[in-house]
Amino acid sequence: MSAPLLEQLIDALRVLPGVGQKSAQRMAYHLLERSREGGARLAQVLSDAMEKIGHCQRCRDFSETDICPTCASASRDGSELCVVETPADRLAIEQATGFRGLYFVLQGRLSPLDGIGPAELGLEQLAARLAEGEVRELIIATNPTVEGEATAHYLAQLARAAGVQPSRLAHGVPIGGELEYVDRGTLLHAFGSRSQMP
Image (cartoon, one colour):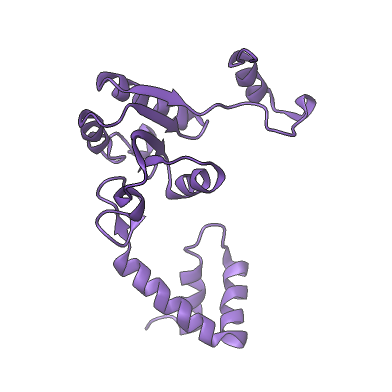
């Protein structure tokens, strides 16, 4: 005998990141008590998204089409390719900068202990793209974690092997930050990566 629908709904909501038992209960009760129409719409959109959203064959970002709108755009600069770990990272860069190049989304980072190697990140696909000759600069925008740094080094080697110039996002003291409150690792990296003032 299967669990009652309410329990199934609560359990299903727990699949979301950061949602525990109590949060899932609150969401379920809210949908049932105050927003049945919204819940039905959520169910329909969620079902459609799971069925119709795949990955762009060129950049590996989420897309409803084989080639996403960014990769298909003639107004983007194909000589600059920015590599990010996740679609959320790509969106953050897109919204915060005037970057007009293209992207490659790893959908993760190298983590041998978790079984995530070059094949899982599509690095053969990236190497083939670099070998095409259009890309002149590979902008590495992985996170400054241990795995992110290891991934960055691997990507830089891949770029150099293809004759492409690798570059790395700058890391350091945040704008508006005060040195006494910046963590030691960030301050050490910022101090070691200091640049000449114009």
